[in-house]
Picture 1 (cartoon, protein in one colour):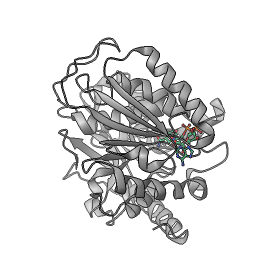
Picture 2 (cartoon, helix red, strand yellow; picture 1 turned 30 degrees about the vertical axis):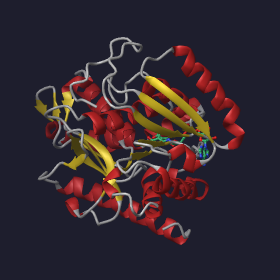
Picture 3 (cartoon, protein in one colour; picture 1 turned 90 degrees about the vertical axis):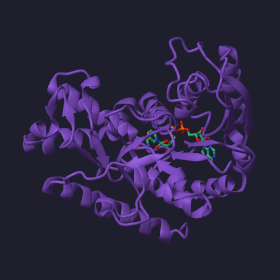
Picture 4 (cartoon, rainbow, N blue to C red; picture 1 turned 45 degrees about the horizontal axis):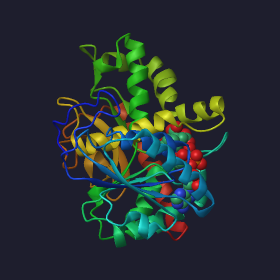
Length: 344
Ligand code: NAD
Ligand code: LMR
């Protein structure tokens, strides 16, 4: 795993040299799993020098479909893809895993909030937490993608008490990418000219996309944030409600953008964030920015490849404080819900 790994030019260009990564993907035959796996096998998640062993976990009724995914992966002839195993046994799936991508869970449908999925999904993460604890490599890094991600990650952490909390994350990269795009469009610049944006809080409609520290085409994001009418009536709701908007239009939840965001989360975590920029990830809180201890909360983070570091010393203005506090209250409420379910 080198941060100097050359970018992949063609998906079958590869420069295997690093130690192989064993990657467990749950929900492998679902929408996101299907889209993501070809990127992982192409070297886009861990770098073009890193061979991968895939461990695919699915429920028994989806094993046949998973076999089809394996056939298609084989048919690509990816040079980095060393080995594939499929199973419906969580302990076998996480055996020796260095990375866990936990997608396997129900998606919401029109009119639902993500928290409405807790009853169906949270218990899955208790099972998978125990399996990770029992079977994964000590250095395993886990990202929860199945919704509601922050509460599910809390459940997982509770059932894998020996796993360092820094190794458990929830994806908020999709919200981050959505906010980057909306801000770039507002400013009339390419997304490559937007940096230092932050998503705070829960991956729910209370998330807060913070542009006050952003740099946008050489200008300060605070200049755009000063237009509070646009900020509060257009920008924040468009990012916070984008998941629902996609479901309305597609009839099912995001797939390509979700797989891309998951890949980006893992790539940055393992290979490092861009110099001078940061990203957002749901990480374990320990009192940063007034966020209570023991929540999995999205914050601005950087990585040098060895782990996430929360960006320190940001000035939080009163409007941002109000939005962040609302999302913290939402996270605390979800924590109470999983407590009431007896899962933590
Ligand atoms: P999907 O229904 O297409 O696929 C889910 C897959 O998970 C299915 O194949 C199912 O068989 C499998 N599964 C269910 N229970 C499992 C278990 N216990 N073990 C292993 N596999 C299991 O759904 P999808 O569109 O791929 O979405 C998956 C999850 O990701 C949903 O919860 C969705 O809300 C969430 N999601 C999150 C984000 C995000 O940014 N956080 C974005 C999009 C979707
Ligand atoms: C998203 O943000 O697109 C996903 O979390 C799916 C959803 O339910 O909104």
